[in-house]
Length: 396
Figure 1 (spheres, rainbow, N blue to C red):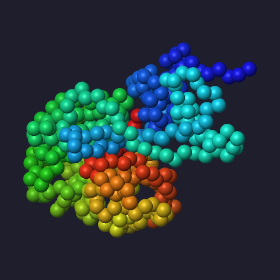
Figure 2 (figure 1 turned 180 degrees about the vertical axis):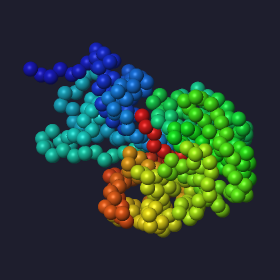
Figure 3 (figure 1 turned 90 degrees about the horizontal axis):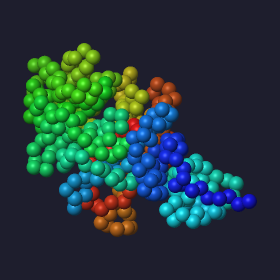
Figure 4 (figure 1 turned 90 degrees about the vertical axis):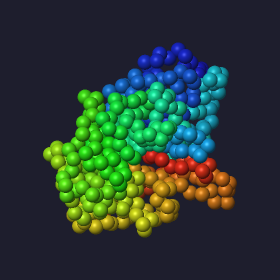
């Protein structure tokens, strides 16, 4: 008796959704290529409702790039590269690629040869383009942040005016929507999330302190102004910002902090040494600040000893670039992900590679944190004129 191939058209959608909900979301871009039916199922809100019921939500990485030949940006998300394994029973259905299907549903058990007992785990990762549905036209230059499965963004419109609206992309269906308008359009806006509220900051040196921060409550769908800082803070400029320990820190010629629970501002001293560190070069994991510094290594801040310490055991990490514009740092599932650009050595001079490394963290004592490289891959090759924009983790 021979095994007959599975006929997918006769499997009910409910059963397929229950199967897909158990698969890592990192495989959804590949599964969407199986058929139009799969593409519809992996982008359905019903699938994500089932995932939530199963407790299978996970963090996913999103990257935006700008290409010089295009007026707008393009979105990419991290996915696993399928391992093409031999198929002992070739399926007569040309629309069903069982090699992809099997590798996605058995991501940690990929046979390299039918006669081999040894199995190995695939470590191939790549960034794939996300087909975004524009319900509304987004700003051309963006600053972004994430709450849950949504990426919120604001910026400059195509006519050069600052947008008075916040747009958001639902990363489950990759559709773009817009919120109600802000009371006052900010100049060079910076978006931060604190206590599941969206804070939009004036991001330029010529600050209007009466409109320094506006806050959006996505539960009540309303905007409100945050109280203006006291007179002693006026005259400052903002060079960096950070959400840490339930507070919003702004760094410049003076350091100050907004405490939302007390609804007030305070001036802080040198205990938060992030004055010259851009936001894209720092992240917070388990209430510890990590950054990439001038020494071209990853560091963490010892808040008790008030000093920066090196993240140890990363000798196998490739040398990171000097140019801070070519690197991004993000917290991801209790780990750090580093993304950077690198020229194609000995290859096409018109192209460059985008590298990505996932680093697990282990605190061994109060003064030592060790990193372990989970994987380090070239995830994308792009034209040299392409520029990095935003890099973030989203929960879906």
